[in-house]
Image (cartoon, rainbow, N blue to C red; front, side, top):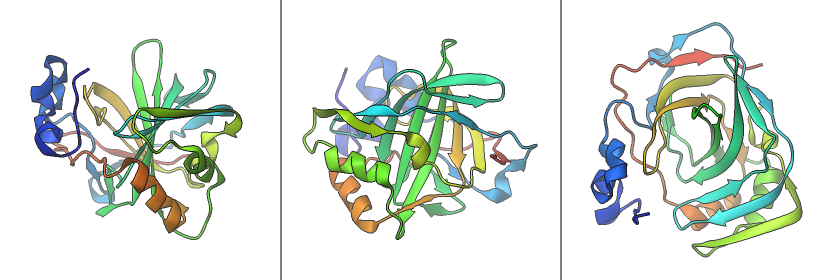
Length: 230
């Protein structure tokens, strides 16, 4: 796999030049992340995101570009009649998506896939506040600082249910993965409400992985929907 970065001559504007499999990164109107706004979104009937998550031992990798959590099999997102298995969590600082003109301090992306090859990503913004999120704190306390290092805590359990906001309204659109190979056709579900975490935790996260946000991509004529989540 060729090397790529978030800045310089191997940064986002050059990703498509680094490998023949990165062609989608060239930046068509089907890439992610994008700016999302209430004014642009179409309100649709309520279609809740149903999270069927189990606890899993903590397996966290610092790949030099992001903090990534692997996840045991058996946890699923169910939406629009389809089930997607949770595969991985990734952390970005600052947030990649902009919501109503605001770019949050960080963003968690929960990446799911199914046996048809479909990919669904739930994005959760993190903003500075007074509430301690015990799952995020547990991740940060054990996260490796060195690129290429990983940590496996057999007795350290995590459940990403507790990384989700209480209100589960969301924006939905079709886009891509936000890192090479920028695979397209991804179903994005971007939570409208952020999760508050202490400033110190955001700073610690940034020191481990940031800055690692891909620049905003053109929205083009894509349809954004806004829906509720029970």
